[in-house]
Image 1 (cartoon, rainbow, N blue to C red):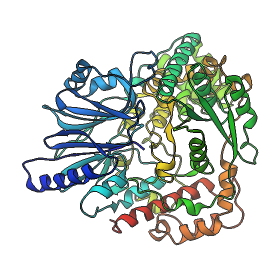
Image 2 (cartoon, one colour):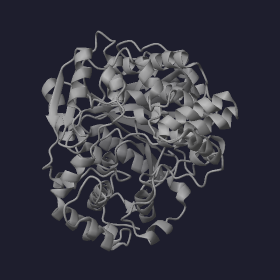
Image 3 (cartoon, rainbow, N blue to C red):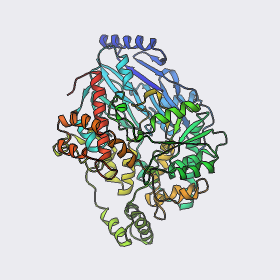
Length: 605
């Protein structure tokens, strides 16, 4: 898997220079690692490069390097093969402090740059596909993508202190969306941000703003908006497919993966194999839909049953990460992903992740409130309210009443969270200090400047999907989420929610845009498959382990979880509807993360 480590230091500081020299020597001898940039006081190393997939783009005069995969902006599909960066383009990136990289390119990348004005800094692409973390050791700033590499290469025991306030916030909010991670001293650069790697660095700066894009809706006629959406989706999907000779597509049978397949199928050079998972249950078997989509595209489909006897012990030793990552979405899929990918020579797994957020699949009446906030009362408001009534499954009067009610200022942004989990100790929730540290800095601005529907769309899109798999590590195929590409994110942020749901249906604009390319049965389906019954069955088969991990674990021991509630949740047979199934799995994932960090260095704070 593609990874990088960059370290910046002052050559005039003896202690920093000594540590940097030892790091340089160790990484220079490491098998598979190569030097991507070497200038006084700065080194960048990478591993796992693959032609056309992840590489190194050096900038003019040794002033920086871009790591990952670039596509050229401008609307056209990237040609098969990598982007060639001209000397002029490289110089422009440096001269603009990286802004030209965001304006002229898109992709999956992190740039390490040095300019006279800002010194050394990192820039993470707006999609956030490739992570960027920072840790300072003896004055040396280290930017990295995979924590285990820092653990392996730093020539001294790494002092990883658990931030228990962040752990409580993770339980409460569901994710950590700010710069802070759950390890003291380890911070993350957020998508679209640039952050200094100099001593005493100021807070990161935003080079790209989701709120700025969403604040100015592009209210086009439905036909024109659908045509534009179709073009951008197709360009992004085909640009990613051009990176690979062959690929595996996780085809659920839902709208998003069918759209992804429809866009891929327009490329006659793409070699696609589809993979569908199914399990017993009312909405867990979508094979019929997947078969329709695969048949229409003329591609092979592999069907695998999820393993209800899956043993959770296999997930209790993840690679250490700066923040706990859940495993529910991986249950019953990871091993099969790796097995199928290896057997068929398919290095990448494409997924339709992000479609819910981009195309607006929410049962709500917010599009009417958004229309009212932008256009006021008029005939258009009545039509928007009628669509919103269908979307939210309420009466027209209720839809209009809610549109007015939702004009009131919102409270503190939730950070992407539903109400706090039912197993959490109330005092732990109330005791979370500095909640703003754990939420994206744009959320407060979004709450103040955006109407309610667009606010929630922005909120959902501010949390990128993980690039690495801490449970399978290098065995996992490379995950590519083409829908979460910068041009498509920017378009869907600019399209108003009432346009995205025109006619009163979730993903209405996307369905219209790709109606010729996906089976009618999928384009018109209202239901959506899920994992609820499968993850309940897995937990039911692992109850003794779950009781041991949680009741004897640190979350209960430190009073973050209510022991009595946990005991009650793990008593008797669980069902998909009750028993706090997803929350229990998430708590087990956090306990597994705590073990992985303790194995590195058994200290907490």
